[in-house]
Image (cartoon, rainbow, N blue to C red):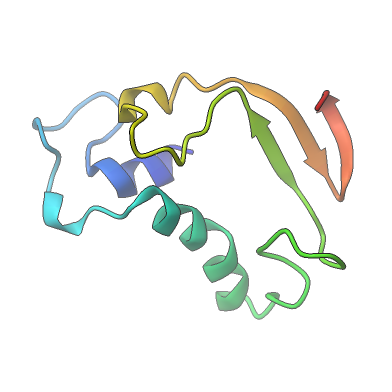
Length: 97
């Protein structure tokens, strides 16, 4: 999650100038998520089986206690998001939904 936070805030987790480094290069939260999922699968030639929540694809994901894609949620609150459940290969491995 820290890599995605760096991409959207351009601030390292606990350091950096106000407004971040190179603020014009910030990604939206949706762009950061796509870069870590579908774009990563495409880059590894696995987009047919990974990278999105689509029937027939493998599904590894987490359910958080808040919507970190909500652009109104302060960036600092992303790091305090709590994992409510972890789903591995389509099955609940931790927590509950």
